[in-house]
Image (tube, rainbow, N blue to C red; front, side, top):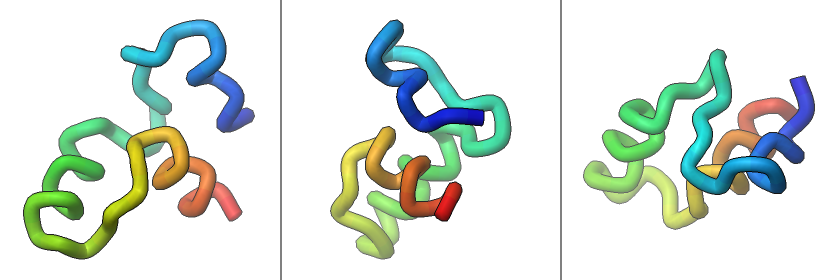
Amino acid sequence: MDADLSLGDPWGEHPDHPVADWQAEVAASDTRLGYWAWVAARLD
């Protein structure tokens, strides 16, 4: 799946990387990336 999903819907969510997982990492200070940058990093 392509990380360019954000271009069509900035409020969208990648099916394999839920927003809730990103939020938990942000809350734990494990990432400072925005959601779609975080998804892209996980896809690499």
